[in-house]
Image 1 (cartoon, rainbow, N blue to C red):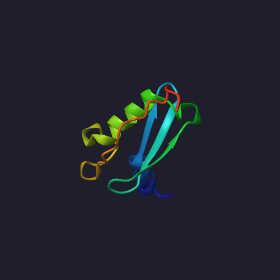
Image 2 (cartoon, rainbow, N blue to C red):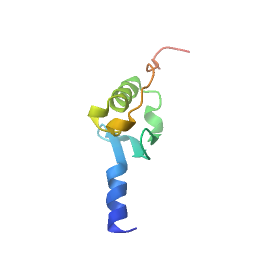
Image 3 (cartoon, rainbow, N blue to C red):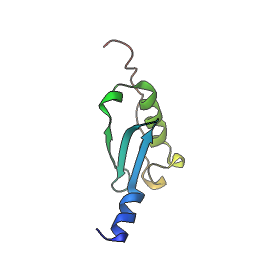
Image 4 (cartoon, rainbow, N blue to C red):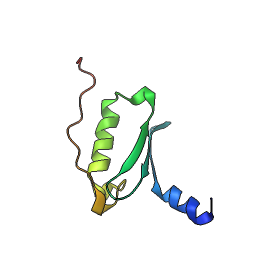
Length: 81
């Protein structure tokens, strides 16, 4: 990978952490972020709320302003289904 490719990749990565990496996203064009979430937090309501806020508001930075996404309500995973 060239230095330019490495810089582009680094600029496209988004990481959510809280002492450990919880989620990683790769911005892959306007309005698209490919994500992986740690299995230990796949039903974590506070993280889901944080992701929703970050991904819904282009001012928070994960996605470019022209490519923001509107997401629905975060399910409350603490309640039994």
